[in-house]
Amino acid sequence: MSNLEAIYNAVLDGNAPGAEAGVKAALAAGAPAETVLKDGLIAAMAEVGRLFEENEYFVPEMLVSARAMKAGLAYLKPHLAEGSATPAGKVVVGTVKGDLHDIGKNLVAMMLEGSGFQVIDLGTDVTPEKFVNAVKEHKPQVIGMSALLTTTMPSMSGTVKALTEAGLRGQVKVMIGGAPVTDAFARQIGADGYSPDASSAVRLARSLVGVR
Ligand code: B1M
Image (tube, rainbow, N blue to C red; front, top):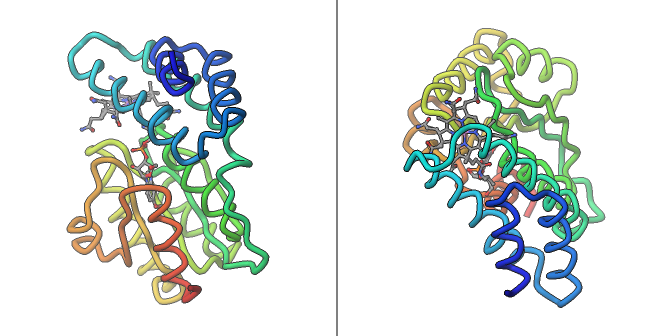
């Protein structure tokens, strides 16, 4: 079994030490961090989602798989950082109100930090008011919202409205992402951009703050 298969199986089995050991072994064998992420960890979570849809996995299985993914991700974090000497800007990130999914958001935060952004992570279940208060307090150039549930996507629109009502919309760019989110939805709610994954989120944030 290859190291990537070992990572994939460990995440599917909810085996956190196995996922971490697999990531360690794959990196030691020379696999690029991006490959370990995409073909090992992310591929496994996609399969977990499929199994959940097919009623083969239930919430407890999803939860232990998520823990295993996080264990692998924690070890991978320093290897994903692209590193940049110039501070690129400040970004406030969070998963929107009612939504507890944080793996993708954490990945985006990690990649942003790695490319030189200062990241203020508000965590999960973040209300529009909390985003507004964070903009007042931290004065970021960008806020980044993540949603994994179709039912929580409207909270992104709520946050854009709350920023407008607070007179802050002109001071901060808004970027959004998450599996059910689309470019069309971003345009519909008046966000400044959407990205489908963590690498493109970094490119988007850099373009929003005018850093090449
Ligand atoms: Co949930 N869940 N879940 N879940 N879960 C999904 C999202 C689901 C699609 C599964 C399915 O049915 N196939 C489904 C949503 C259906 C829908 O809305 N249409 C679902 C459901 C239904 C639920 C519950 C309602 C289940 C229940 O209780 N009956 C419940 C809701 C809880 C809540 O949030 N209130 C629930 C709970 C959970 C767990 C807690 C068990 C766990 C989350 C643990 C955690 O995050 N700490 C969980 C998991 C793990 C999943 C799946 C299997 C995996 C999500 C994940 O981590 N993917 C997911 C199925 C799936 O997505 N295939 C599913 C890996 C991650 C790297 O990808 O998050 O997409 P992703 O992030 C990507 C991009 O989207 C993008 O970049 C990331 C990296 O490339 N991105 C951004 C994300 N945010 C971005 C922000 C940006 C830019 C890009 O800019 C700011």
